[in-house]
Length: 377
Image (cartoon, rainbow, N blue to C red; front, side):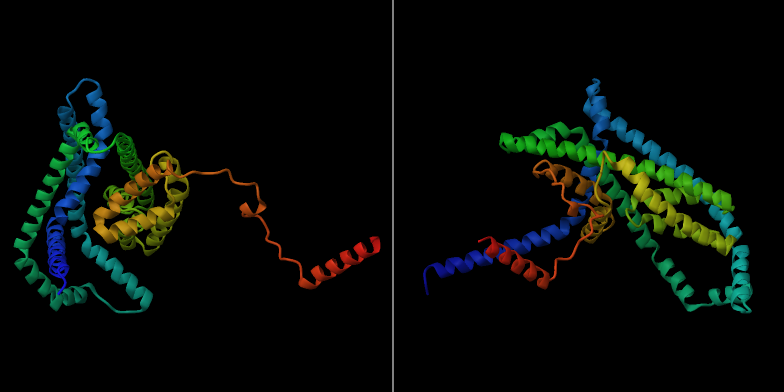
């Protein structure tokens, strides 16, 4: 046996053991790493406000606390107002559910020539096996729901703590990171950090503004059609359509369509048509104007980044994919050398591509030119 073979086998086993240990540690810490990534992007979003307050003489930690307190107060107020409105409207919806069910059953009977009644439908639902299994599973899953809620609260607390430290100690964190890099790399890291702050803050600002416009537009439509619960539905459409990228508008429009269907089936078609038209208006008119200076990326690139982010990190990846890709695109754009485009007709979409001449025509032209040269000679 060669003398180097035992050492090579021991080294290979050691590398394999280190790989298995690293994989196990990564699987155990993936939740914490995801929370840190979310906290980092949240800190980037509030960085401009904290830096502006710190530039006026306020301590950075106090400025971060004030910004977080304002965000928490605004979020809590929004949730309380929305929750109270939704609670009252949910109670009304439950009270009016028999009328909705009667209208749906009447429409089905008139359209499909059936003979259904609400009593039969209620009896079939109450005595169905799947409802009994659902009640049993819900009764036994109360503890699991409580554990999930507590875990979600602990995750939110973790995200807020990390984002607070990232925002409050932003300059110290940048200095610590740059201290292990040469001066040329330090300039690149600081530039990338600045671009990330601009793109993340601009993304959240543009999304919030588009959510407000989308909610107002759908609220006007729902009030015009006389659909109940218009304020709650408008808030739902505005938030879901903007903070679930690319397909959020169609997902958010499903609930207003369902409520509109209980009023009049044709109203559901009106809501669907409005959702489709508004999505085109938002993609080609509204969004380019609002995001031209913040996250100006191609819609196909945005869709691909959302799909990739969802595949890698789920809903969190879908939310942070667009600002991350916008930051990467803006950072790499400084290192891509661009040239002036030649004025060629083939660059324009209106150029008509002409076919080449037939082979016989070229042969005849060559023979004719040769005969002319022979005559001249």
